[in-house]
Image 1 (cartoon, rainbow, N blue to C red):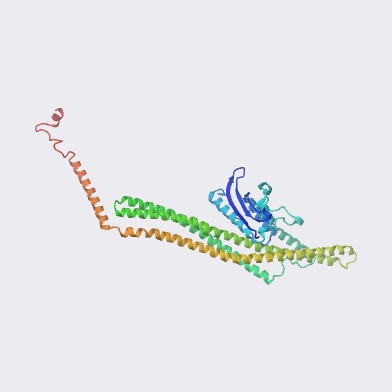
Image 2 (image 1 turned 90 degrees about the vertical axis):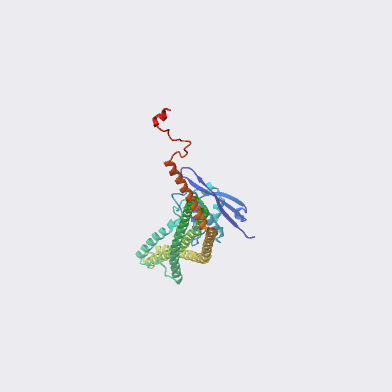
Amino acid sequence: MEHYLNLTVSDPIKREGVMSYTTYKVNTMTNRPDLGGSSFSVIRRFTHFKDLHRQLADEFPGAVVPPLPEKRGLGRFEDEFVEARRRNLERFLERVALHPELKASAHLVRFLTADEAELGGEPEDGAGGEDGAPAAKGKGLMSWVKKTVNKATALSTQLGATPHVNPTQTPEDLRFEELSEYIKGLEIQLDNVATHARALKERNAELGKGLFDFGLSFSLLGEAEKSELGAALTSMGRVADELGRTSTELSQREALQFEDPLSDYVRIVGAVRAALTKRSEYRALVGIAQTEVAGKEAALARVRGVPGKEDRVGAAESAVALAHQALDKAEREFAEVTSRVIREVEKFKHDKADDMRRISLDYVRLQIEFNQKVERAWAKLIPELEALDIDTSSSIIATTMDAEASVTDDVASMSLNPNPNPELNPEPAAGRDDDELVAV
């Protein structure tokens, strides 16, 4: 029976307290025996996702561990940001569940099944492991490697040995260097495209607002025209308002179908770069082991055959044997990491071609759909505008203007003769002045 593992993230909830944070529900549907073969849910914080990411990177050095969404200080509780983070956390788990190595990790099983209290809040970096090596092979590994390189180089030089910190480059190493340069350039170019995609989304959001204002102004203009022209202008305002909503919807869909996938792919390329860096770290460890061997062999040569130092020969020979064992282990681990990185890079190349094709097709189809809506909306106005009788509209306007002029004349006449009806306002009697009339 083929096993499946379906993971989703839902129900983000803000938790208030001394340190406010957001929790997410991680939902599991599976038939895997190690997960109980059932459906269940757990509550997780973003820090738990970070711990899982670090644990997977440590357990499988050289693997392209799916990226997590970026951290954010201000505005991390805004609805839009919380939803984007939920979506990207779900994407992270989906990719882990599909990865041939990562999906089998005991760390993933613990993440999906343990109580929240059991997970706690693990530190970002380990305090230190056996033999002084960092417990968490993240940022601390390269710092430890550099310190060890310096110590080994200094010791070898003192003992007269030739340092081998940087092993001789092989054709494979040169290919990896070329690939690293390609990944760096790809990351820069993808980030540039994502930036412009964000600008396009914002422009269409502004276009939606502008069309709404444009439609409102035409509607008001149409109301001022008591004619067929006014009705046509009102229709034009209504269409512009409709297209304003369409542009706003386009902006939202561009964010989901174009900007968000591109930004996510920038993070994926960063994960590939991290895998390549991990190989370089393990290659440096081989160089350290080679230097240790050279130093121990030089120390053995200094005591072998020297009178009075016979008792130190046995210890020096044991040290040389241990150094060779460490070198063998470093070379095996380097070969394992190299093989893993090669598999991951080949998979990335295949997935990248398919993903970029899909992202581009989604964007093109979205633009076609939007522009067809725009064309249909404006096209509806053409029959109404073409059928508009300019002469009728002009006569209506002229009649309206004549009526307004007539009213104006009447008002002027009334101002000259406030009481035009002589019967209601007879002339004063002859020989009487106004005072007499008032007296009467």
